[in-house]
Image (cartoon, rainbow, N blue to C red; front, side, top):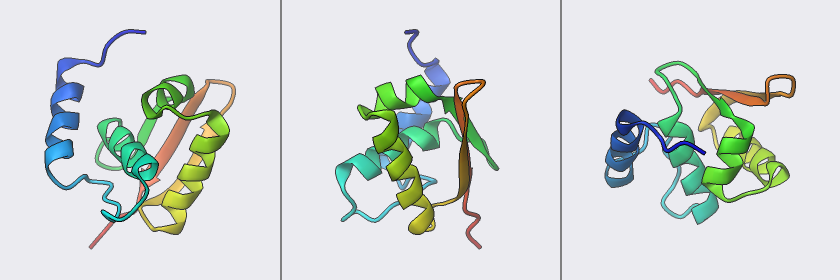
Length: 99
């Protein structure tokens, strides 16, 4: 598996030290916080997408555990929507717009 590009690593390091664009409560379980950080590194201003296998690897979770965390991010109003494109093997999501 190739390593993330330098810009992705720098963005992830910045978000690890500062509030994440997909912010979850500090009291949230560590798996949820890690998933939000991984998603933030793969999110453009209005949407995100990544290979499902890559996300499971980076988060250290099975696909079903990752699906559960995506649903939890919807319930906690961090994400607006998400879906898995089984044909392409990708997961797509849309962060909730905060005003």
